[in-house]
Image 1 (cartoon, helix red, strand yellow):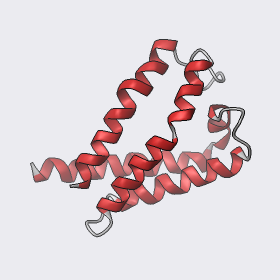
Image 2 (image 1 turned 90 degrees about the horizontal axis):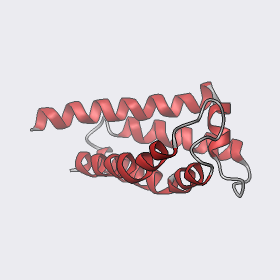
Image 3 (image 1 turned 90 degrees about the vertical axis):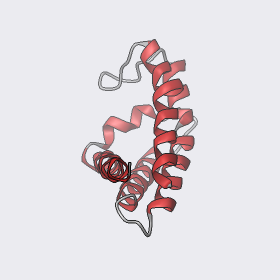
Image 4 (image 1 turned 180 degrees about the horizontal axis):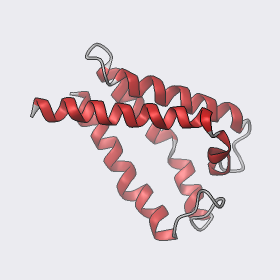
Length: 124
């Protein structure tokens, strides 16, 4: 079981690092995801990218694993308005960010809780 957790920490951490880097590689991809009531989307995008890189990297080390996992859980909670906005918009926010409406619901109701649960599991 420990080997599975170690592999999970590496894969999950690496995925968050890559997602965080993508905020800097292609920030325009993320801009349409922000609901209109979010001002300063460039700043929020940068903060999200930095947080994802930090927390993803934190999962890779035993000394920071628990705090990083809790940080990921916090991020997932902070991202809920983005998922709700995508549902309100019918699943499509731009050409690059477009899902069928049922896919937007799956992201919010199934995938998002799985990510939170995975972070919780890896925090132990």
